[in-house]
Length: 325
Image 1 (cartoon, rainbow, N blue to C red):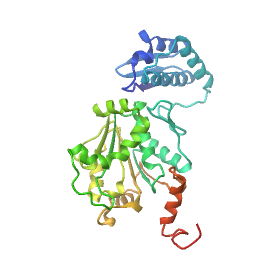
Image 2: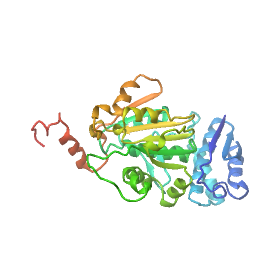
Image 3: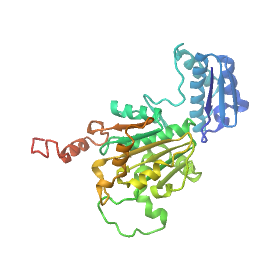
Image 4: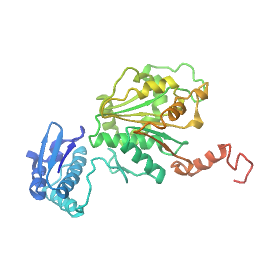
């Protein structure tokens, strides 16, 4: 069996592979696999259990290299032994599986879905190229989408992560904002930046953004682009028009994924019936390869009061009907 892993751009190759690729040689000799590292890829070939064990070791070396941490010879041997012992003959390969947790850049952070709906949402992102995540505030639809994007970036499945949002005011007229273009659009993009900051240290985030590996942009900036080898997120999609949604969806290039998130109960457009999210959910509901995931108040992961607030504003809830709290 043969497997190829992409080396994430942030990884220090010397820290990960050792001087003269010492660590790779130990994996090769101990597990009996063929390993070669060139052009940003690590290729592994051998028997299935050995390849799976080697994959686990290489991914741990990537994490060490991302932190510029050099492992000793004994640490690498212990890592190989642990991985070899944990592999069963019927184990399956997965270069980016996130059934239980997502691997992000923040040291020590592993993000896990909370409940069946969030787990189904992440599974849909893993297995489909276009996913709609719909639900009320606080259900993790945007946070998990950003985490999935960072995970795909870290394991080398994509080369770019692009996060977009429509610049629509939430029921308030803010007037002319001061400053240059960046200062004007920053308030609209702040929620996406907050999620990124929770998953990357500041230095890594700034480096990735400076190199356009990670982009956080207003939706209008997507026009005219074709995005290959990328994961693209559209947040607050309920505030897009039908034309904007069509424009966004047709940006998808080869080997890319799109995640569209929104809450139909919080439409800030002058004509709510013109929401591009609602229109797209209707038009694309039977298209193969497109998944729609519905999150609900049971999936709220913010403060415990948020779930009760959602209940209170539900026109069909007990609060609205005069029931007891």
